[in-house]
Image (cartoon, rainbow over all chains, first blue to last red; front, side):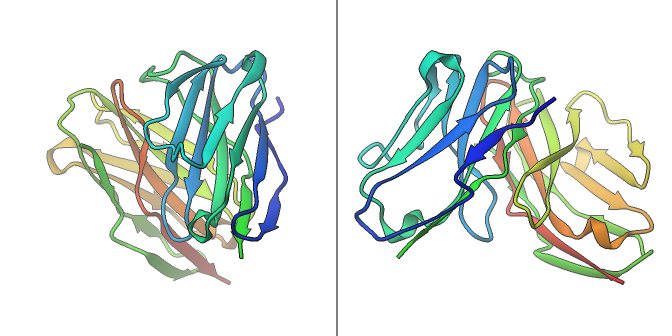
Length: 117
Length: 113
């Protein structure tokens, strides 16, 4: 079974530029998550989708971050404009069941390492 | 609010030594799951184990074992006879019912040959 795919793996941009990340979850997984992992810290949830609907985006900085999951499969996360503090690894994860399911295990992709200069 | 504390920032051991990674959690919820993930240098978080709050049985899987103690809110992870390939950052995480997954800050394990 193929895992969670993400691209690009690395991205370097200058502040105030825009950037987009792509995620393809494990086939059949209904729930998709985007996390931000700053160096030396654990991942922090940005947004959670169930199918193509947003379940939780309370920690997403909506003035500059946006995300969508068209057709309930692939997802893109965009930052516009980027700031220096956005430098981090952006991880996508997916899980099989309904959002909020206690038994659901999240499976992670390799992440996109973003450097903002 | 929930919180996960991994007090050990970095641990270094010599190959074949046993090593224990500590995890202490806080939550007011009575129903929750605990997880351990491994993050090798490649960056992908690899799921290792899930344990629910009603099951305090310890678990062993090969060289890995987990000790869950509800009385001390701890979920420690032991690697027996460590190997160089075990070198990675290990994260403990907590998910109470209806809430999001909260990660600790991770423990960097280095196994020296």
